[in-house]
Structure formats: structure tokens, C-alpha cells
Length: 230
Ligand SMILES: Nc1ncnc2c1ncn2[C@@H]1O[C@H](COP(=O)(O)OP(=O)(O)O)[C@@H](O)[C@H]1O
Ligand SMILES: [Mg+2]
Image 1 (tube, rainbow, N blue to C red):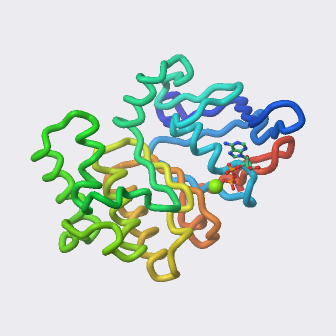
Image 2 (tube, rainbow, N blue to C red):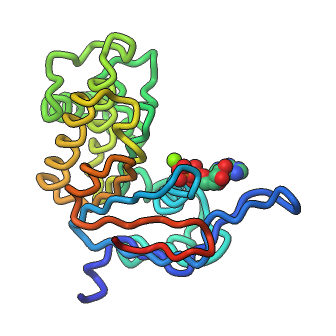
């Protein structure tokens, strides 16, 4: 497969936290590649470093060593504001907790990334409404987060992640807080949008059924043990 088919390339990534006796080595010499258009599941025991890995790919944190390339670009060479701009333009995030702002309604939560990017309020709201329609919440535009169910809150979070039309969707246990029915619905939504929006997606999940519905599964092992595709 040629170089430009790779959206995410990690090479020899190491990441540790803390100093001296408190030092914890989380990732050590990790290699990972995700092709454009691929939906990759990341699985592994709690505390193994799945969120850490996603934060590195999402430019929310920097590795102690190794290469993080996004669409052929060496992200380590970028400064803080360049990384922030790339994040806003190219990446969408969904976390286990929705992280919606309580004081904004659904539409303004979804519009927020566009406002941060400097787009006019009317355009941002229009885009937000379109996205909320896509996730099945056109009747919830002016509901505040505490007026929505857990599944609805996560749908708003998915809409917010996609409002800037990112190439890359990163989701960290996006259904971890939901009951079975809501969980299935949110996962199906992510999978459908992955296809419709031609995304490259990385989904951390403990749910084997969901992992099995992704194109490939990468099992993260403790530092020093072998991680790889399963
Ligand atoms: N900011 C931090 N400071 C110190 N240790 C951390 C920090 N973030 C994560 N860790 C540690 O790194 C390890 C991996 O954490 P994490 O990536 O959250 O695992 P997972 O998402 O697989 O459950 C854990 O041992 C955790 O305690
Ligand atoms: Mg985690």
C-alpha cells in the first residue's frame, strides 16, 4: 500500500508519566498504522494506555519519543498553536463522558468548534442544526445537556465532533456510560457516519461485539509486551 494511504502512523512511540520512583512507563516502542477510510478498534485491559495513545494521536499530549504522523505530516515538528489548529480542522473527538457545556443548548454546543474557528454565528448554527438532524436530534436543538438522556447527550457529542468535517474521528469508550440499547444506537451512528463522511476512525472499546464490527482490531499490551493487530 502506498504511503499516502496511511492516515495515522506511529513509530517507536514511548510515553511515560512522572519522575524518579513515581515514573510509570505506559507505552514503549509502539508501532501502529491506520489506513485512510479504515475503522480501527483499540482494545486492552484498563490502565494499559488506550486513552494515552488516543491523546497522542489527537495531539492533546506529546510522546517522550517516536514519531506521530497524521496524513504524512510529522506532528512533532509543529508548535502548540499549529497543533491546536490542526486539531480543530482535522480531528473530531468523542469521549466516554460527553463533555458538553451545561450552559449551552444542544445547537450551541455543536456550533462551538465552528465559533472557535472564527466562523459566523449564523453559519455555525445552520451547520449545527444540520448535524443534529443527522444524529436524529432535530427535535432537541434548544434542549440543554441536563434535559437530554445519556444516549442523546452522546449523539450531541458525536455531532459536535463532526461539525468541522474532520478527516479523523477519535472515540474513547464512547458508549462506556450507556445502557445496552443506547450504546448500540450510538455505536451504529458512529459506524454509519464513518462511512457516510468517509472518515478514518479509531474507537477505544471494551465491547467485543463493537470491536468485531470494526475493520481491524489493535490489542494494546502493557509496556514491554507485544501489542498488535488481532
Ligand atoms: N496524567 C497522568 N499522570 C500520571 N499517570 C497517568 C496520567 N494519565 C495516565 N496515567 C497512567 O498511565 C496508565 C495508562 O492510563 P490510560 O491511558 O488512562 O489507560 P486506559 O485508557 O487504557 O485505561 C495508567 O497507569 C494511569 O494511571
Ligand atoms: Mg481510558
